[in-house]
Image 1 (cartoon, rainbow, N blue to C red):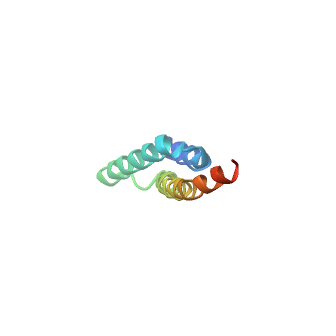
Image 2 (cartoon, rainbow, N blue to C red; image 1 turned 90 degrees about the vertical axis):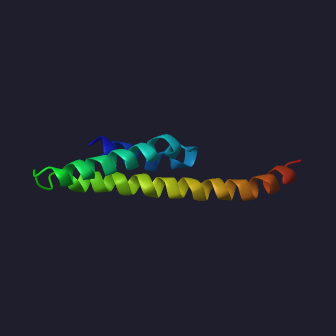
Image 3 (cartoon, rainbow, N blue to C red; image 1 turned 45 degrees about the vertical axis):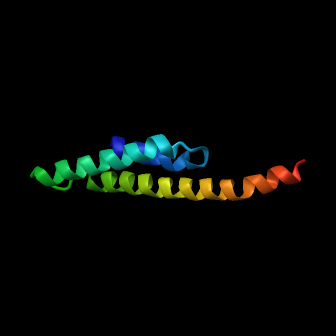
Length: 83
C-alpha cells in the first residue's frame, strides 16, 4: 500500500520536484514488494496496487526530468525578456 501512496504523491507533486523524494521511494518499495510476492506463495493479492505505484513512480520521474529540461532550456530566455 505504501508503494501506491508514494506513487500517487510522486505523480501529483512532479511539478514541484516532489518526485525526487517520492518517486524513488515508490520504485524501490514496489520492486521489494514484487520480489517478496514472487518468493512467497500467497498469490497475487495486492499486485495491482504494487504495479500501479511502481508505474506512477517511474512516470513521475520521467515527467519531472522533462519539466527540468524545459525549465533549464527556457528560463534564461524568459529572464532576459524580463529585464
